[in-house]
Image (cartoon, rainbow, N blue to C red):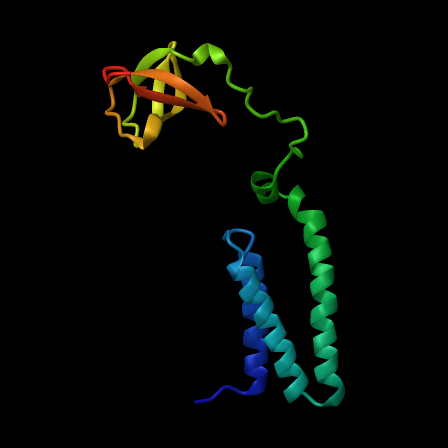
Length: 164
């Protein structure tokens, strides 16, 4: 059983709208793009299969009402309970990046909390730090380590039991 053009039009229109709405909750952009393509396909079906003025008017209605819906969405959604939970509340202008590492860490001794393969967590001066093992070597968890360099904002460590 084949679908009539009106059924295709309604199905494409409904699925396009639902996919665009789902894009808010499904990250990645794929649902929104597929939803937009479904709306374009609905416009095409309407233009081809509807009588002279109605196909064009349906395409114009999709564009106009889509624009109005987008404008209302941008204005109203961030104020809703769901919108407040998923939208950013600040613009990030006051956020600061981490302070640059000082040379005081050079030569510091500590312990690998996790296996360093080559990255991991180490305990230095009683604080946990992200570290990288020198030369990409693997260092077992619990091994004694020593900071050998600071490169590009990373603490580079080596196995303290290995020869210098």
